[in-house]
Amino acid sequence: MTLAPSRSAADRPATWERSDWASAFRNVGTELTDQAVVPARGAIPPELAGTLYRNGPGRLERGGQWVHHPFDGDGMITALQFEGGEARLSNRFVRTQGWQAEEAADRFLYRGVFGTQKPGGPLANAFDLRLKNIANTHVVQLGDTLLALWEAAEPHALDPRSLETRGITLLDGVLKPGEAFSAHPRFDPGHHSAPRMVTFGVKTGPRSTIRLMEFAAADDAASGVRAGQLLAERRDTMAGFAFLHDFAITPNWAVFLQNAMAFNPLPYLLGQKGAAQCLASKPGERGRFWLVPRPGSSAAQRYPQPLEVPAPEGFVFHHLNAFEDAASGELVIDSIFYADFPSIGPGQDFRDVDFETVPEGQLQRCRIDLEKAGTDPAGAVRCDWLEQRCCEFAMVNPQRQGLDARFAWMAVTEQERGNAPLQAFEKLDLASGERRFWSAAPRGYVSEPVMVPRPGAAGEDDGWLLAVVWNGARCASDLVILNAADLSEQAVLELPLAIPHGLHGSWVAARTPCA
Image (cartoon, rainbow, N blue to C red; front, side, top):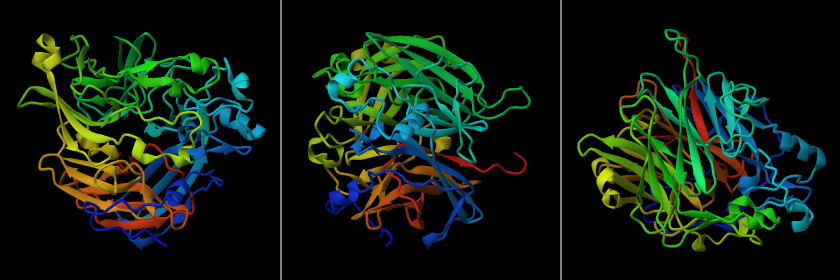
């Protein structure tokens, strides 16, 4: 059975079954290599040439014990290569040191950041502060290396074709062993003359330090710069604990939102909770935007500025985009806000989560008056809703990263208000507010969409939307290809693989013969 897309999700009630949604949480029991996949419906656009990479937890149970939270699962990379209207599928677990040790032991040997405990109760877990680098959050290509990312430690290097794990990489000495490296880099399409990968690492504490790093994303024979070379960096310190998963960039700024969070490490030290379970929002306190000048930009000599978010409470995992509004002189950032930090406490089963008690993510635009920021910080930021339907995993055309974008694509709920599993995709016109939908309901559950521009695209929305969708009807995953302009279905590929609900992914275009 294939998924039947609806024409519009805008006026339909929520239609989902917990058993369908929860059936995606499973161990991946096979690794495939270059397996041909043909459309069950439609046809693959012949111009679609490149590889879609996805990362996410692929191992959720060992020795009969389940992880406490899926974010503690071991990373597995899925690659779908497209060429000439055909597709081939490969998948591999990232062979981290922890994965190999636990595979051999067939039990958990490490605690998980999100609450997974080793067998033996608190006494067996107390004061064991080792972190298992699970490499499960994102996957990007930098030069000839694929990077599997997990933000609490160094990246793992993989072969882009075979997905073979080469091992931990310190990026030619840029990182120190164990140094945090973000799982959410931003790719600058060329604001500083050539494409760059901009990313960061955070050292947290009573005062937190952000290390901003910019790497060449492509070789430049004329200058001798090679892809993966560190081009610029800076370090800045902010007061208070900083839990930062994502950030946004413009040509001149890196924009961070420091959520109003407190961290009480005692339950973690005593073996009662995972580190992330020791985080809590500070009631009534506001988050703060930090505007960090990018090295080499016209703002490079300015000091980072903390600016309070107007909303009294809230939490942000992901940003859509940011840009500098030339007409108003404002810095604009679009982010997905939650009313509070969503978490799964001890004793709760993540498969039984009550969505009605978990705050929904909603897209909000904040405009920062850069002139007022220096004289009236309290009045420098104003915010308005862009989308109040529950949403996540929003993105713009990658060529508009850091620029004023007309369109956004995101995963959303089938219902208009309240929280629920993500079952649809939305294209939002950020200028007019017009919305288009494609729905996988009632038995499909969507993941992060990746917008792929058509080669020689005539417009910002000229391209495709690619996404892995969990098909509860056949307990396996589909790859859906949609027209990015109107979300009309181009093809559905029924994958011979059951991929658990995942996290982030990326598209790497095929190289042209003269590239």
